[in-house]
Amino acid sequence: MRGLLTGRGSVRVVNRTSAEDRLSVVAVAVVRQRAGETPHTDAAFGLDIGAEESVELDEIPPGIEGPEAIEVLLRLRIGDQGTVDAYATAVRSTADPAARFEVGVRRHDGEIGDGEDAVSGFAEFAVYGLPSG
Image (cartoon, rainbow, N blue to C red; front, side, top):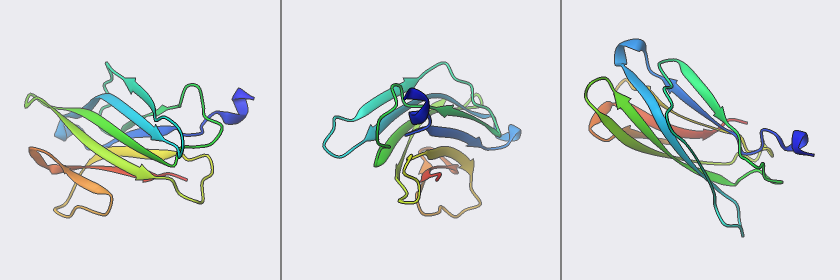
């Protein structure tokens, strides 16, 4: 049964910056929301997700139903300028009953898109969350 549920509620954390940006994701906290249930939380520390890298965080144990939404806190290390926390959310796509998500950080070209927010203190970067199904 567990094999059938693998991937439900998974969150792919992506660093879409370049090596010159010297940005890495060093920690992630994920809250998975389901109607009528207590939110499920996971965290990963000691990460070093560098430019153009990603990791997949599966829900453990996997839920029977995928979450309706997620909230994610990313801790970013930006060169020798220090660390900053960035917050992203995403709502499940009706096209993906497994409810997989992608959250990440990218350098933006001056325009912040829907579902994105500028990183506090580092306006050249944006965080985002989206369903990936």
